[in-house]
Length: 175
Image (cartoon, rainbow, N blue to C red; front, top):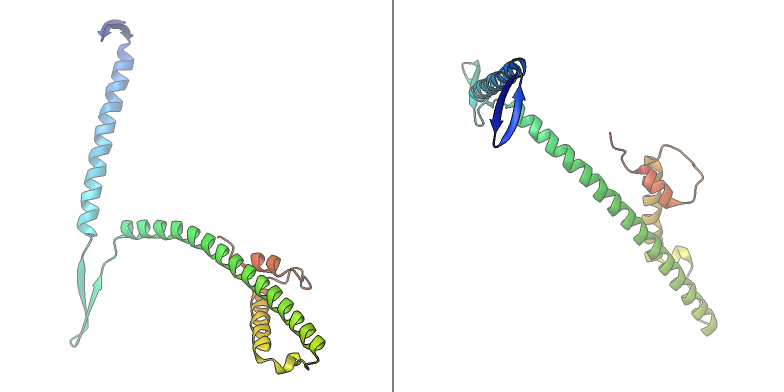
């Protein structure tokens, strides 16, 4: 065993440990050199802005850009991260849309009912549902939304009246 002093601390080293430490240090340097060489070779083969040409016939010249696979992988990872946040935002938007539809339906039906009561109490004849174009248009939009949500749902609980449940089951599932 060899005694050595390192910053006032006495340490004992075995020659085998020193040899192993030297071997790991050399291996680390070698791996770094290989990494740098591969990186340089890769940049030569796939530089960031490499353009090429192909001749298919004497009159046809096609210019193409050779894609850098590493850049493509980076872009794919970024897109995957963005997809996750976009899915969350879509869920929030769909929930807000459904909430708005529910509240609009409640307010519109309540106001329509009060208007009919007011018309009845004053003796004014009220119009039927078929004669009210705005109300029919609103109902048509709500029905189309319900059909859209139901068509996306995989026929789980087909008789369910809870549109919110259908909405959340219709949202695109993550892969």
